[in-house]
Image 1 (spheres, protein in one colour):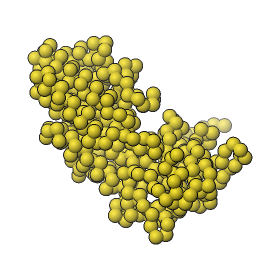
Image 2: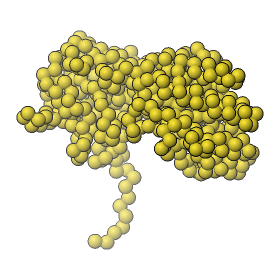
Image 3: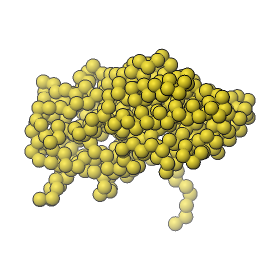
Image 4: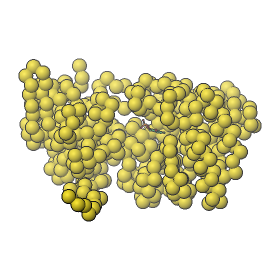
Length: 447
Ligand SMILES: Cc1ncc(COP(=O)(O)O)c(C=O)c1O
């Protein structure tokens, strides 16, 4: 039986969820119904202290294995200038995968030397932009990109510090579409085919690329520690092989992100401590076994930093009952603000913000407002009978929701607010109809 079916119990999340005297859901001390009234819906709500808490946990637990570590926030999970500022304040590094993410970070005055640039097809312009910005590391994805980086860095007369992204061939138990570590992957230098070692040899020859270490990322929403430990071991073994072959001891290993979060009551993700033991702990132990100097260990979590800190608020609208089949509850958002259920069947929990502790009276399927039958946000959600105008809160929406949002059907993208100790501040303003049509031209045309 899922948590939602138990009246009187709020699901455990990083976001500080509570119930106030009005009987309404609160997030970090803010009345969710009030937030919906004040800022409109749909509304992304992010608990600031929950995000800061996760950053601190990562830095503390990784630090337990030696001071030489780094925690890189994968900004693809939720990118905004305000998030960059928060990450800077928390001493985090930042992973960007595009010129747009880099621009956002630079606009927020994020220290460029703490930026890691990822992506499997960086354009020459993006590489030049990142070189000009003076970013900390290029995570080079493939042989062609290695040559491109050399050429662009040579043109500017600089040496670009780089990690090589390795595909270690480890399968984590996760959804196929978000798996990136197996051999059949568009990412990285494949270990099993010898491409990885060839890439390392080539990188070490280049005059304008300074190879600092290796990177891998084995998948996302991973709910066990073994794949991380296995990846850590494989990467240290590769460092040892490089030392044997070249005499060079690379000093950094970045083990990517991927730690899962609690989307459902059944999800039991490892703690950050367990993750640190599996990653930094394994690197240290394996390096000792092989007589290697322990490299600097980096990790790059995204989802597990912001995911559970987020809640999305929707206003309940129309309903459609098909007797004996299904009860559809319509809300004023959908795949535009959260494409994950439509894209890969992601599962969410939700509750009524007006009456979060009320006993469920049945199960509903929360239908989005987009013109797609597949636009369903939550299936079979136990809920009290919801009335038009009530507020539905969908939980654990902090990661890969706003950042994957679109204005499909020209629904404006929602606003996002940061909440902390009963106070709400705008993080991203709501799009207007003018914003939605702002880039359109009306070219001259004949009938
Ligand atoms: C290279 C890389 N690093 C880090 C991440 C962050 O992963 P997660 O949000 O699962 O922690 C991703 C996600 O796709 C990624 O591709």
